[in-house]
Image (cartoon, rainbow, N blue to C red; front, side, top):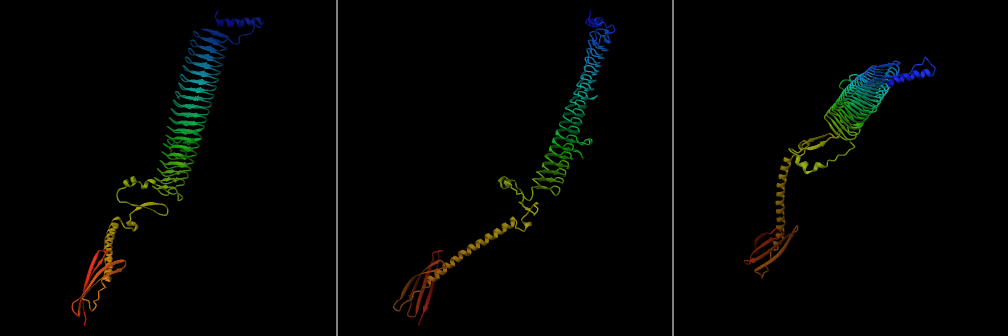
Length: 464
């Protein structure tokens, strides 16, 4: 006798022994093209256990009230469970595995996609090769190879993944990891708790970040955000922008933000620091509280602010500036052309100019002046030499003034004399000769040792 038949017989015998002629078995198992108590095993190798259970597929198994294993090698376990596909498995009350190789485990779990898997109460894997794990985890139809893991997590997109509670991913090759993530776009990922990302090819890591919150087409594409509480592309496109920090507001494409509490509205703008503002296109602000509000401008330093387009601003009026390399030989060697002077006005605006524009002689003028000065110096040197000779001459004259006097009985006399004038020295040798009673001849030779000069004189004296 078959085992299933033994179960039926045992139930009947038990009813007779208890003197209950109307008793019926509450749980009946049948196998291989047999039926009893509403259980039907309709194919070779199949087994059905439970009232109104049915194992219609070859080598299939159905356990539980109104369980149904219709597919070959299918398994249905639980009240009203159904395994309709080949090699499908449904475990749990009202579970459904309706396609080949599908698995549904948990109350009201449903796996309708080919080779799909649903695990957990009210989990749903509607797409081929999809996986849904958790209560109300859902992979929607058409989301081939989609994966949803976590309570109340939904995936609508091919090859997309959502892991964590209350996540939603819509788009192909996208992912969400954490809690409360919303990702709409292809090739985009969000990690944290929670973030909203509407754009293609974008990435966000952190919490409470919003990219393209209004979900305008293209505004949030190719955006990268790392931090918290950042609002990107909320009012205008921020496609291609990268944001690192917290509390930043970015509504400009291709911007780069490494800041906290920064505001960027200029396309291609760069903001680095805290409380930075960049409103000009291709503008740059580096430093806390710096601001670049005009196109192609740049502000560097704490509190630096630009006031016009194409301006470069460094610091504030309270700063000093040091450029150690400006005096190096390498800097000098790098210069070419006419040398200019750097000037500044009271507001610190810099420019270059020439000496002539400042009313100062140019290099050629200075060369001419230097030539004239050299000529004057030569003349002064000559004059100084002449003056020295004059003083020596005066000293010599003083020395030669000592003319010898001939006494009545003398015919010839000589004297040697010394003279000085303005620190110059003079030496003289004088002589006198009586020619007759009424005529005398005299002369002298002088020498100035300081200038190495000499001089002389002669004289004639008549008396009667």
